[in-house]
Length: 246
Image (cartoon, rainbow, N blue to C red; front, side):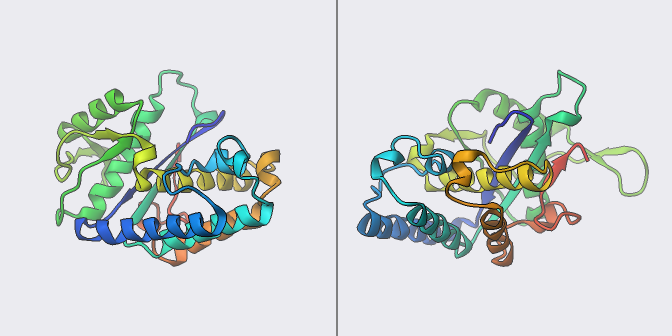
């Protein structure tokens, strides 16, 4: 999720044996939304466009209350899944170096948290949405060899190469992946939360026509209380948000 002054990159991961169950939960929700509101099962859930009433969602002519209900059940369905979510925010306003690689560093911080959570017990592969695969593959390959981590015992760094990630990062069209759409959903709400909580800014007008600040916070609280957010990603933040620079 990109915006003018900050960048959000959200990752979710799950045990391989939970994939089908998680998929079935979202598939079941989409069928329910089709039957109740006419929301086509194959229609991609692009949360920003959904909340700002852009096509194709404008076609449905949903009321504010219906849109709120759809967001609520999306949140509750994610909360019922067996998965973890990491959110990294790059605060562009605090960088003076125009050569700072925002996407690459956000990805590195995501992978580091997933690697830490694996603790050498399981392997993982990464699938991303289309359009930025080259820099992401380059970054993932690089940290397999060199991944400097702040030492707990000194002011220096130690090299802890990534070892549990298998294969190169692969890409998939977001319209064909419920899980990439979930990342988009969570990422947009993290963006809104950061804007309200850290920037002390109002929600964008079109978004504010549908939801308010309290609604945004309730989405995050639901994901936290259900155990979906990886709080160990940053134990100093109530939602585990990894915000750089610190």
